[in-house]
Amino acid sequence: MPRSKEEVERARALDLEVMDRAAIEDGFRAELPPAPNTGVGVLDRAVDVLDAVEAGARTFTAISDATGLTKPTTHRMINGLRAHGFLMHVGGVGYALGPRLLNLATTALRELPLRQLARPALEQLARSTGESAQLYVRHGDHRICVDAVESESELRTIVQIGASLPLGRGSAGKVFLAWGPPSDEGVDDIRQSIATTRRRGWADSYGEREPGVASVSAPVFGPGDHLLAAISVSGPRSRFAPLQAKRYGPAVVEAARQVEQLLGR
Image 1 (spheres, rainbow, N blue to C red):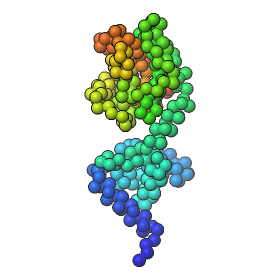
Image 2: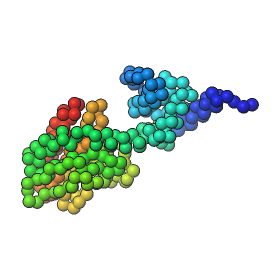
Image 3: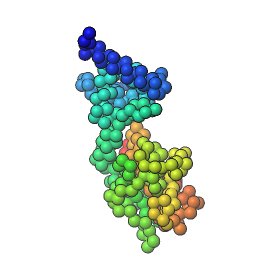
Image 4: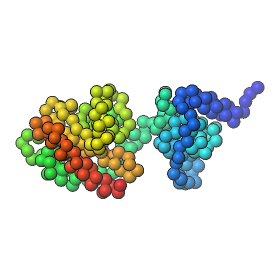
């Protein structure tokens, strides 16, 4: 007997729920802050789903429970968001925010006056350490240098503004991996270093990206504790012994905090 459209949607939702239960643990209940009601129903429901996933909802049932949406509506919202790249389903993990959000975030970062706000902190960092200072933002599996202040020393590191560097090499890359989404490139050799970065609040590297070059980096967080950028100080490895790096660590963290205050965090 032919089934109605609503019956088909319900069956699909049920199938999706069964797959979720088989793939990952069920029973999660995301706790969300009150969401604004704009009067644009479809938009509000889509944002509710994204908020639920951001808060940790990984299954179809968890998303439906967290948003209060019916299962057929949840099914339609999830499918639509996946089609547009705002959501993805990862085997063994469940639902996660999709790659298109990262592209939008990168574009939004370019719109922020981040470079102008961070410039005084970079200049102060270069003066206080005597080394070159850089500001990076993430773009996919790379970090982009959006500003730099060179050291006055004859022997110094130079990173060109606009340079695209890998995440898996260098202290700034470790910052993005410690507080941001994982990378598709292999980083198994620096996993311990990434964990150390997150624990102490700053990263260091010695000859990882270029022989003879060392650096120390710290994260810059924006409102909502979202990672926006990384501030670095870099120079010849001969001037960056581990004890010296420990001295630079607090200076780089302080520079990052100055930028955060200007961003209203």
